[in-house]
Amino acid sequence: MKRPSFQFYPADWLRDTALRSCSTGARGLWIDMICFMHEGNPYGHLKVGNKVILPLNLASMVGATLLEVEGWLHELHQAGVYEIAETGEIFSKRMVRDECLRNKRAEGGKLGGNPNLKVNLKVIPMVEKEVKQKPTPSSSSSSSSSNINTPPDGVLKETVVRNWQSFNADWVTGKNGSQTSVMAGVI
Image (cartoon, rainbow, N blue to C red; front, side):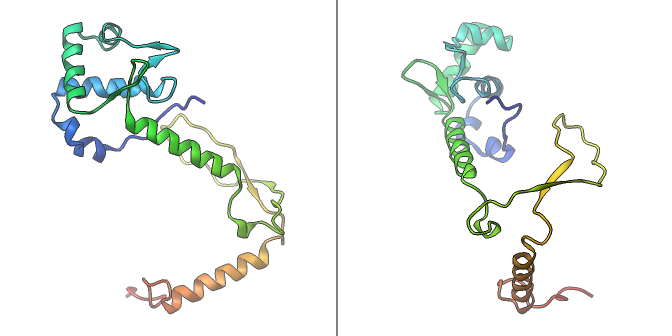
């Protein structure tokens, strides 16, 4: 599955001492490479289809000379920013590790959600209800459905009420360890 975006953590980028030890040209090349590796197959590898992106191709792709790209690649490799696979392509350990974790979480998600929201260990059928809330304007290009899934009326009412009362009682009595009174801090 091709995703239109990837997570980027500015703090990690700025605090990565190996990357910070490289020149601005090498760091600029690396962020372009990260974008190419996002499209790579397997994810996190510097490949187009089954073809390894060679330094000459990379130079053309980023608008730099072969000499510049080879120098920046050497800097990045010496700093330990990337690895080279047995098949010869550059890959990002972080991107490969994150993709593995993402796949494991997706597999776990297929097993179902919170078991407390299931009745007799069977998934409760959901009924679609129309959302009456106006969407917030966004500059994002993503989209979502205007319907949400909600359990049929009365199916989970007792469980929800019981859990809410338990949570509320714990919160008021301070059993959650952070709050001792509903009105604490309120003037």
